Amino acid sequence: MKFRALLQFSVLGMGVLAHGIAASATLLDVRESIAIAAVPEVVWKAVKDFDDMRWHPAVAATRLTAGRNNEPQAIRLLTLKDGAGMTEQLRVHDDARRVQHYTMLESPLPVTDYDASLAVTPMEGGTSLVTWQARFRRKEDAPVDDDTVKKTISGIFAAGLGNLKQLLETTR
Image (cartoon, rainbow, N blue to C red; front, top):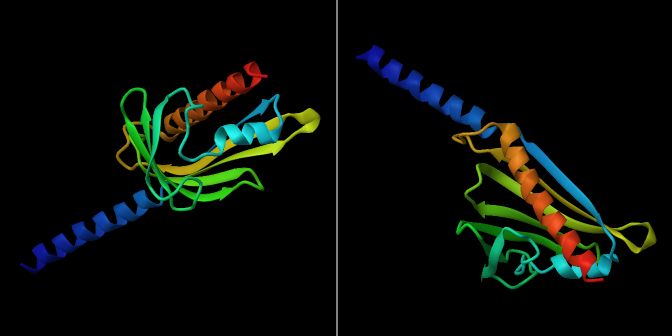
């Protein structure tokens, strides 16, 4: 009987250790940037509203479910064109610095601990650099590896930034 209790304790301990290892999975980074031939004020106006991501081609609708637009702790539900939903919470919105920082609360993406920011900075000649970056971990039970997750997030960012560039540069 003592052996059985020791065995159960050992198995439990290995489970806790494995969970601790999974919880400390590698922190991954993705960063995409694009230069847009428009002044920063125009670009910021197009992306700054937390309750409006119509500039991203994969987003069908954006709706606040809590809080007020552009105020920290506001929560938005993004409905994607394929019907999937993502819930994100605004952490920082800074019009003066033209940056917003948010976290993902729920998503079909195989990520956890997701923190992202979107920033618009001035460049020479009245153009802007838009940078979208995120840090996250791959979910323990994800059916894909770290590189695939990074490529997926990078593709999402690149599609959004490319569409934003097209929208703003063709309306000039």
